[in-house]
Amino acid sequence: MRIKRLLVLIIVAAAMIAAYEGIAISEDETIGGGDIVYSKPVKSVLFSHKSHAAMGLDCNACHDKIFQMEALSAQNKPDFNMKGLYEKKYCGACHVKDGMAFPSDTQCARCHIGTKGFNKAPKDAKK
Amino acid sequence: MIPNRIKTEGLKKEDLKIVPDIERRQFLKMGLLITGVFAGGSILSATSIVNKAFASVREFAEKYPYKPHYSMVVHQDRCIDCELCMTACVKTNNVPTYGYRTKILERDDPKAADRKREFIPVLCNQCNTPPCVLGCPTKATYKNHSNGIVMMESKKCIGCKTCMAACPYNARYFNEEIGAVDKCDFCFSSRLSKGEKLTACAEACPAKVRIFGDLSDTASDVYNTVHNLEKTVWVLRAEAGAKPNVFYTKG
Image (cartoon, rainbow over all chains, first blue to last red; front, side, top):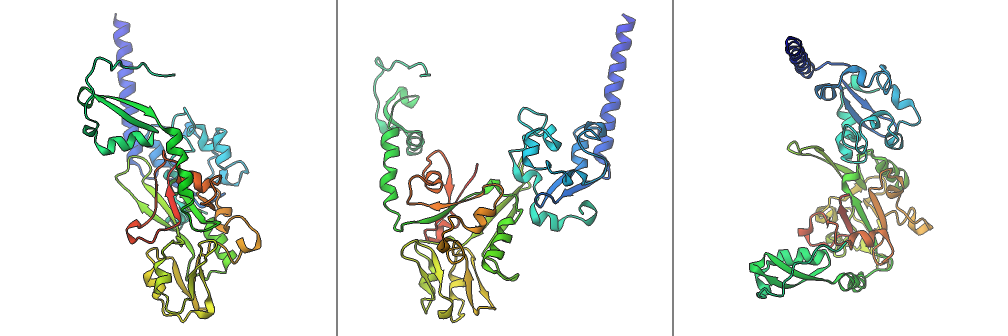
């Protein structure tokens, strides 16, 4: 009985810590690499570290199995395109039908910010 | 699978008029004609008129006055503003930096649940009743009688810019180099007249946003999209009454 109670206590404590960390991450604007604006193969795609971390994803979720730590390194790969995403590469690891996030072939302009978005983006977000 | 039919034999048939027009139209769009109304409108009987409804579009095609009747369907939500269309257009038609024949408009909707950004490609709508042609005092701009494209004959242009003011789509600019107003001609001079089948922008688009073709050809993609009753298709600034030939849709 006592063990059971202890276990419940541990779980509750762990959940509270996780929740607290989640809040801390969403409030920190400079989490991870900030905003990343890809300009290849088309201009342009915005990736926000902040909004992804706010959903509770930690660094290990993507780094560095799906994305290398170096910003924008993915866009130099030949398969960094929509076809690659549909094959569950890069963003497609989660953004795929029946995946964790909305599929890559929907809501195009949610990530694609276009040439206008590229021109408006701060310099440190792009190359 | 045919869903279970509700038996209507014992019920009293009521006046068809109690079904609102809008509801009747919704059924027609699905290819169903309401034939009976029962129980105060909560039960409807309907019959399929798909063949009849869809056969009539052939007559509709005969209304297109040009052959080929060039047209473009823009799948608006596919546009990502990569502007490869604009780059291709500038290169193909020697468009100067201060003007444009096509461009991408941007609209933000902060209240949208998911995608808050929208890009809208715009170009000359090659209207059937073009206000620019009506306004031109020298007939420098005219409607091509075989394919419906609104053309420019630069040497007749006196640069009065009446056409620019008349255009509901802001699709014209004054080209300093040629000393005349310039506009999109669906790449007629640069490509179509030389045997190409697509405009430069449609060919350059990586997301199949711009579908170009002959609206009088019942086998063409433009015809089949515009006549797909299940799809919402609209034009820009319909209230201008210019009968544009550039159509917009989503999906």
